[in-house]
Image 1 (cartoon, helix red, strand yellow):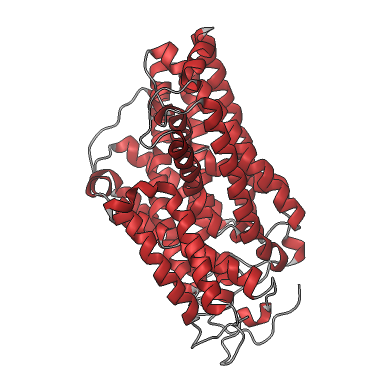
Image 2 (cartoon, one colour):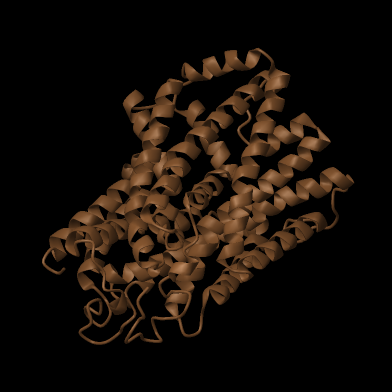
Length: 473
């Protein structure tokens, strides 16, 4: 990696600098586990199971929509990850090429705020797994009630918060090791759960799978609308990581390893996890007489101490995993990008952890009751055009070329200085496309667009930016 020159302290620190070649030690397995941890959350399981139940489609059509979504997401992250593999730069630094060296702070912080909110929420969700374990082993139910949580809940919550601080304080390499452990471990446990449910269900399981596969409901708009809804829902689920995938790709040895990891990690993971979710969900109908799509409900019904311990571990590892991937690494870099001279990866992570702790502490008593989702969904939606702008800017307007030195220079007249450090053309494109994205969250007439509003928003951002900036490269 070439030595940076003319670097400005407002834009540079060692965590934002291009990853040196001796630290580019991620291969396809690490990328596979990034996606494994992303899909293996409690919400991810419920989503996967629900896709077979909600839309009334034939099971093979559901699998086809899931597989196509996996390949589409793979294509998106291959595009956003390649520049970071080549130059070793994280998402907020890559965004400087299209948004301006200072303008990139804005989309970076929007992504960071969304992540910090969910970091707190997922920290609370992970603590419920620890509480399940403590209760299962000791038989204690906890005492007191502070902010809607008892003593065991608080002990669990503080433990999870401290464990996550330990992980990131030791750097990205320990996070990589944890992800490599958690991904396969959770699969092993999920397969054990599937076998236990199958053994209890007996031959009735395959019969119930057949019932689910035949389509168990109807969807307004017909089969094709249902197919598109499943496709769009899966894309929307991964959208947050799609935009900042460069935060992980910067550590990959080469583009071939990244693409191999994305192939096995996206279509591969999605199909495997969806298959497990389908089999377990079908088994719950036979064993319990009702459809259960929440794994914690299944564990409580089984009432097996061994399964409780194993499942609690799985829920804990899976939720910590997705928290690291989707909600910790992004804001750590985004905050570092805001004030590089004062905030590095560790400090950014500590700020995220503190804010996340507050959010998680108030989750039960306040946040879950006042409805913060429209706010968070609005921030998430307006990021869609940023993806389109970054990709069309790099591949078409700039022909796949970046001057890395200029990404760290605030010199007037610099390649990415634009207008005072802001690319006004990119921001105009973002605002226009963002109006549509925001409308899909708030305007009832556009609510039917559902998950694929992200795709349309990204496409709009790309088209508008190309029209306005095609002679700018």
